[in-house]
Length: 110
Image 1 (cartoon, rainbow, N blue to C red):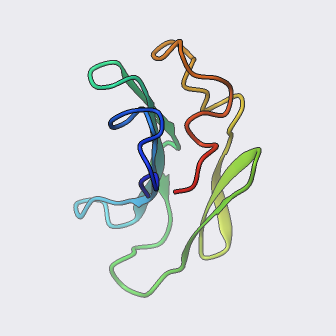
Image 2: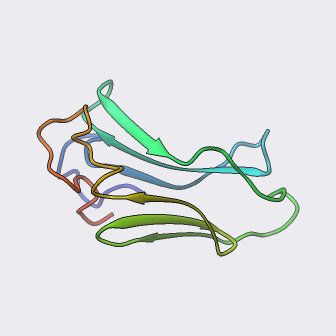
Image 3: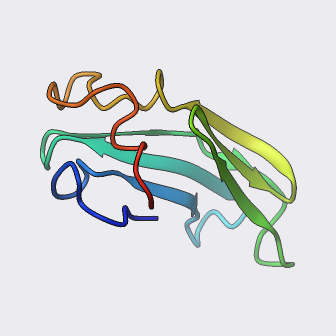
């Protein structure tokens, strides 16, 4: 997901949320990732480790993402596999963009 507006600047300063990342050569594995921070090459990202489930190529699966003012949560088939605290884990001030405040850029519509 991309932000509705680039309030904090070009990618990834205004954020990006990857609800699900999967690679064809690892058909049983997914990752959750968020991108933020300063403009490339001063960008940051964080997310889940590679998480294994059953082989995604053999059946349909439900991927879900919940986001509130404090936390983001990622699910596969109703099983939570990653969560991040917006104010602690995803604070873009953690080294790359000293001009942002806690919660940015994940305090705007996506």
